[in-house]
Length: 98
Image (cartoon, helix red, strand yellow):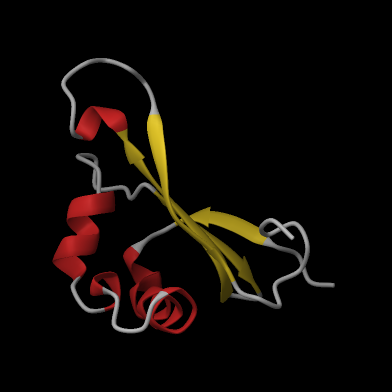
């Protein structure tokens, strides 16, 4: 079995992410069409994204987004909301819940 690699999203995965969302999350989802909407939701002030990818041999097999509570609230709560969690149906155990 190949190793599962968990990594932060970066824009080099943009096309793969759009195809994955369209195929495994929701056909014609706004995130698979509009970069600016995805960036608004997940891009942080430091130009990093609040989004993780699970890959095997550079193939996207799962993803997990999260949103910092501080993005929408000025209080210092240090909390996050989990968002857009998806794993391919045939992904190996350990990528998501089975």
